[in-house]
Image 1 (cartoon, one colour):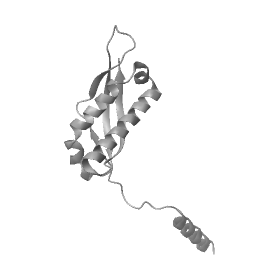
Image 2 (cartoon, rainbow, N blue to C red; image 1 turned 30 degrees about the vertical axis):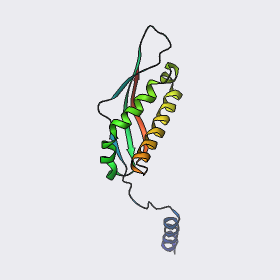
Image 3 (cartoon, one colour; image 1 turned 60 degrees about the vertical axis):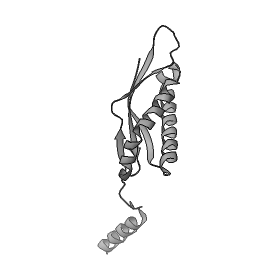
Image 4 (cartoon, rainbow, N blue to C red; image 1 turned 90 degrees about the horizontal axis):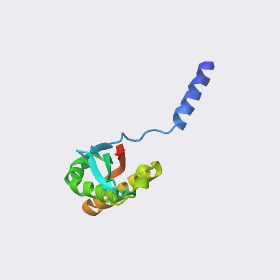
Length: 131
């Protein structure tokens, strides 16, 4: 009787837990070399720059060649966004996250225009150094 109740509890729990439907095919594409660009410094005495290692989280590794093909366009978009930012935003944690989201939105937009599909899931800054 006890083994029957354990079996029933196990059966009920196994039926109620969500199942993973399919293994993900996510992958990553990293820009080489790192992206280095200037930003708008508050003082005119020094030139500010930022060095960022950017990784793209790709929804399907079958699109890796598409991302590689468009990498100059994507790199240019990232440089353009960062170079227009003020020093305070570049150096703050919330500003860095806002910049990352801007880059992510712009990259998704560009790839949607070029390919007609959503290729990138997210943009990650794995190294972020400023001076």
